[in-house]
Image 1 (cartoon, each protein chain N blue to C red):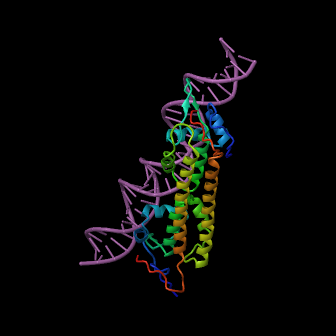
Image 2: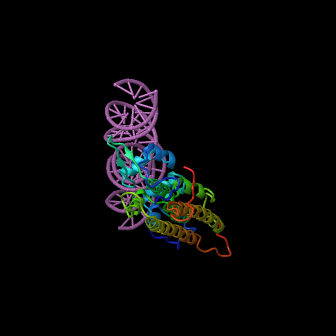
Image 3: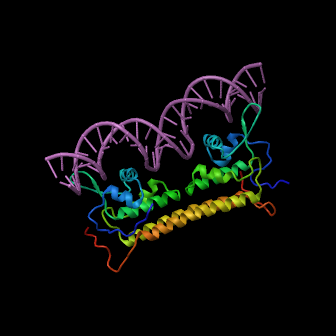
Length: 131
Length: 131
DNA sequence: GGTTGACCTCAACAAATGTTGAGGTTCTAC
DNA sequence: GTAGAACCTCAACATTTGTTGAGGTCAACC
C-alpha cells in the first residue's frame, strides 16, 4: 500500500540534491542536520547519501519548529521519538505534532503573560512623563 | 528570573547591578542589549549607566520574545515603536504587546499547518501538491 | 572508458548572542 | 581621603547554526 503524496515513502532513495531541491533546504544544512542526528540516510556503495521520503517531513518540521523558537537540540529530542528507520506512521507524526504544538503554545502563553504584566497600573492618571 | 512589577517608573535611576538583580538578566547581557539599541540608559557624570523603570519591561519582553523565536533584531524593531526616552504609556505597551502576540501566533499557526500537512490522510483523497 | 556534474569529507569562516577577563575608574561608606 | 565594591571599555572566547571552498570520488551518459 502506497499512500502517494507528493513523494513516495518507498522510493529507492533521494539524493541530497533532490531533497534540497524539493524541500528548499540547502544541501549543506541537510548534511548539518544529519550530523546532528536530526535526520538519517542510507549510503550507496560509493558512500553517497540516499534519503527516504520521511526526510521531507522532518525538514519541514525542523524549519517550522525553529521559527517558533525551538533549538535544533529540542527538535532533535522530539524527532527522536519517531521510529529511526524509514517511514513513521501517521500516529507517530500526530503524537509528535501534538507535543510540538503544546510546547509552542506554552511559550506563546508565557509571552502573553509577560505582556499582560508589563503595563501594571494604568490608573486614570497617565504616568507623569516628566521624569 | 523575576518579573518584579513593583518598581517605580520614576526612580532616579537604577544601576546596572540593580537592574540585573531585579530582572534576573546578566549585566553583560544588559550591556549587550544596550549596544544593540534595545534599551537605553542615562549616564552619570562618571559614565556609569542609570536606568529608568521601563527597562524592566523591556527586558522581560526581550526574554519572552526570544522564547518564541524572535531575533533581537526583530524585538528591536518592535521596541523601536516605543517612545525612546522614559516611560512608555500603557497604550504604548498594549499596542506593542498586540503586535508581538500576533506575530508569535502566526508562527505557531505556520507550525500547526506544517504539522497538519506532514501526515497526509492515508485513506481519502490525499492532497497532491506538485513536487 | 572518458567526461562531467553531483557528491564526499574536512576545515575555515560567518553571524547572532552572549560571557569572561584584564586593566582602569567611580562611588560609597567609613 | 581612602578602601573596596561596583562600574567602565574593549577584546577574546564560547555556542549555535549553518555556508563556503579545497581536494578528491562517484555515477551517468555517450
